[in-house]
Length: 189
Image (cartoon, rainbow, N blue to C red):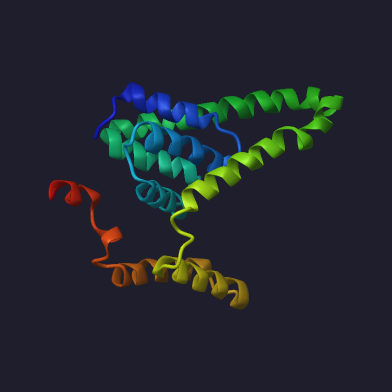
């Protein structure tokens, strides 16, 4: 399904204003793309997020590029990326200018008790909602636990594990129902 450039811009512009870093923005995208519009599945959004995490850019920038291309082609990529970056650019400029005024104010001391807990709540909510299908006995969970243990206990390179995990997943999960293209399943019904 394609979205108009106006719809893409609106979705990613709103998401770009999300607080709480990548997971906060991801929660907003999940609400818009999965819950409200039914455009992607939770698995597909997790896959796009995973791709965004491994490319050399900001995670949500990568997600904006992938979603923009999926819903609007090359033009959609430019629209989604611009919409996602514009709020952050605006906020950084405004906060940089306002920092000198705020740091001498008593209001600056309130930030750890007001804004930060709200951001943490958004991040935790997003992590729980997106991970609810993962935390059940499965091959995916076993591979994730093994990778975590390898990096934690041995100091094994996460880059090597990421590449090995991709190769292992290709062979281990080949032919599993989750590995099939959702479009193929719809075409067969």
